[in-house]
Amino acid sequence: MPYVTRFAPSPTGPLHLGHAFSALTAYARAQDQSGRFLLRIEDGDISRCRPEWEALIYADLRWLGITWPDPVLHVTVREDIYASALELLEELGLIYPCSCTRRDVMNALSAPQEGAPMGPDGVIYPGTCRHRQMKSFQPGEAIRLNMANAVEFLGDVSRFSWQETGPYETGTHRLDADQLIHGVGDIVLARKDIGTAAYHLSVVIDDAAQGVTEAVRGADLMEATQIHRLLQALLDLPEIAYHHHRLIRDEDGRRLAKRSDAKAISKFREEGLSPEEVKALIGL
Image: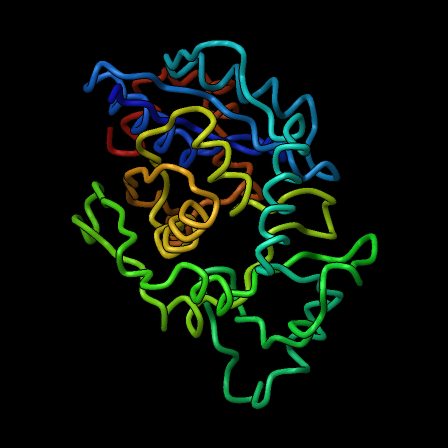
């Protein structure tokens, strides 16, 4: 099977050095394996995405020497596809509507003062709305996966595995029922705050649609891989490999974020640095 990977930024701000490392790592892996590197725009957060940020993504990547085939896939044109997946999960009795705010979630925890249980998506949802059926869904509500029902539907989930090819925990990993139910919980598949499919749902569907064979991304997403493998199994999508690379951090050891625009690739470019100098800053 031909090697295919992708870089999928959100146009909500300028790309920073961490993005440069991820894009260049994916691009190099595709070249090393005579494969394909795809660019995908995760523009689902319509309240924060801007055309000017998307244009800057293209300019920064080209400046770094990265090329990709057209057309570029945009998340916002695929709402019908995500809706079909949600309909399937509804038919299987695996999703439910949720009206809880973040404050509601914290208030529902039995002992929040002892520290809320955390999973890949933050605080693990306590199941307040789990009794509800999708027929009671109201516009603006979130849609959650009933993790226990999903695990029960799949049966022995340990038969579903994936390969980690990155420098951390390299090798074969398998789904674990107890970890999914108690360590991940009922994740959000569609978000009321942005009115579209949440990342976990869109990323597995789009990776399958584009024939991605390996997802290259930061180590901060490693814990979410079990969610993506689960959704692949539920939606009958192909298994792919994952390559989680190191994170680029600032002088204080904090992971770079878009709000730290002093680290933006465009600023280095404007200051006259060469692509080679930027690559050296991130150890390439």
